[in-house]
Length: 161
Image 1 (cartoon, rainbow, N blue to C red):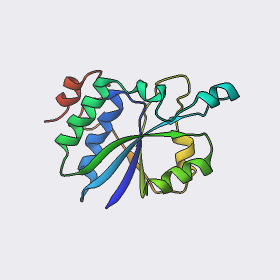
Image 2 (image 1 turned 60 degrees about the vertical axis):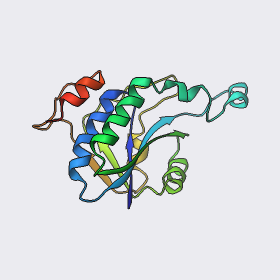
Image 3 (image 1 turned 45 degrees about the vertical axis):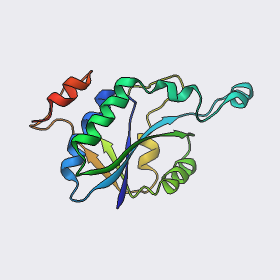
Image 4 (image 1 turned 180 degrees about the vertical axis):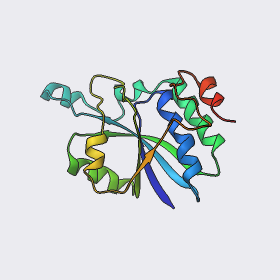
């Protein structure tokens, strides 16, 4: 079974690309929604840094619910749908992350303007393209989808016919 990484800014709008991914999947795949964060710059912040700390507070209840909706809607295409945080800003660190999660393919949303969820968040597209993992482009502007970004779960469901 393939493990596919999809970068996310933890907004409901970023999940709109999963419609396209589900239709492209001939067999079920494990989906890893990755949110990229830089490590703290100061030694004091680094001492207080924990992987389960306040960084996970940036995941809203709405985003969690939208993930469940997408997982249930596309149960045939997605064996699992999980959110993982990548901490770092270098290609070797990202390669280790990809290897640890056994990622076989990266699905990059095309023409997506990444909105940073918090101060340490960043757009990982440049790093993902440099990791030599096969990249699949995801398109949101299709005939069955709304081109504008859905701000709520109900609008995310509205793009499903």
